[in-house]
Image 1: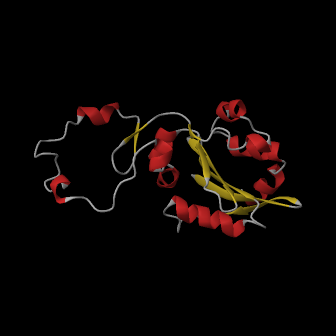
Image 2: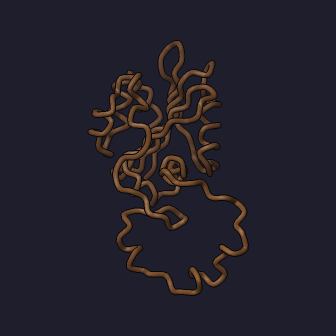
Image 3: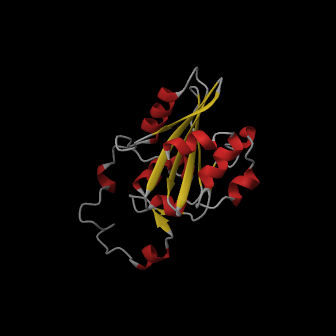
Length: 181
């Protein structure tokens, strides 16, 4: 079960809105959705959670690049919504080029015509849709909420059971978040 909400900071406090991610395919789409909820380019937080598995926070401040924190990258990698957050940049990878050169194409489903070693796949804790390994545990900007009252140590101590509720409590937005839950 997934839950996603937007928390937009306003002059009067936080406003929450339930959000559907059905039309969101990329981090750019998610960022645009957050900016649409923004009042005067104030901070917008996107909360995403998969019940008892992982949670993610995306912070959008005006036109700045989004800041992302994911509680468990390997668990999120097994989720279509989690994969939106696990960008190449966040994972420390070089972005894939859309155009592959002809020498590197794998036309028979194997590299250099050799069968793929399946033993390597069993060791991976998580993998993206591209089949690349993703580390287990937290990933991203651990200071994403520090100026809002949740420091790195507190963020890392949160478990996935009610992390978003605990964050909202510190922000003073627990009631507005509960209205959309």
